[in-house]
Length: 378
Image 1 (cartoon, rainbow, N blue to C red):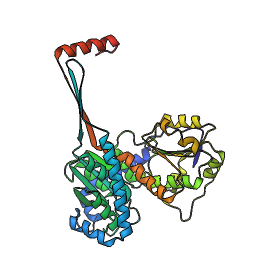
Image 2: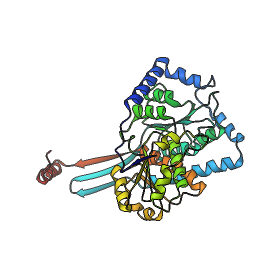
Image 3: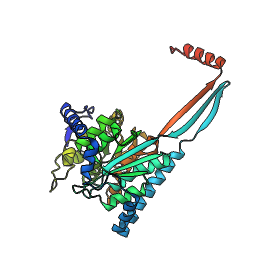
Image 4: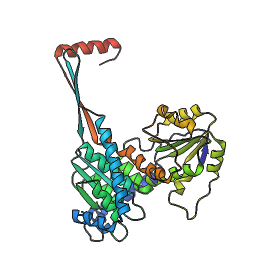
């Protein structure tokens, strides 16, 4: 990890990486995205039929099926509760003015992930599909990148089926992102979620579908002396498998934790996420509130609080999502990545809020006068 005195501002995408990815995108366009995708499937066809999805369940053991169904139910409960927080309303704050709010789903979405045994993330992959269905998105496409022989793991196929997409494709990677962006597969989806992917694919997703905030901190771990370094590494490793591209950091008030993380040596064999772990920022500060202020200034997507001094300050953390708890249990660690994925693909990502303002000419004139008197220029 890289020691630092504070959390540095995330750097923009490196010019060399952007150039490399742009060349790869143009090469795919020259070859034809559909031709590239058909080669991935080795002639097995691009779209996966419902019969294959149903057969996949017969290749799984009952514990696997039970685990996937339980994770699906968790996604579903969270999505439903999110949806319940947004309700349509109509009100008249003053005479002649009526405000209405309607919550409407986007028309289409796509989730792109790996379907191979060694890179699949079925628990995370289900999240966007479940959230989109709860939101009411009409067209929900699932893309599973096959292995080198065109095959897809039955686990990934069953996870896709549980997510209830309207279409499932044997395709993934950068070629799929290009095909979706260029409308080769039909209408360009309103939302495109990428699950996993290497550095080049993540960079391609940012270039083609970037939201403007994708280079901000993805995960920051706030921990004190009670935090276990092994547990911190476990959380980081699981996050980096999902988000290897986003900046990541650990801010600790413990010199011991700082020293152990700084001197951490690579395990054998060296895992794929280790290079990103070594590039994560490691900061030691003396005070709890100093650490909290440092994190609140960068407003990461996900903050994991480890240790009692930080756990009791959860309500003061300014982040999209906060995970609180002891991460020494394997089951909790296994869910950390899935919960983090929900932060990017919850129901709110697939809804638009429409406010309708109806007023009389007299009311509009009165409001304009109030705005001018307040000091604003119209």
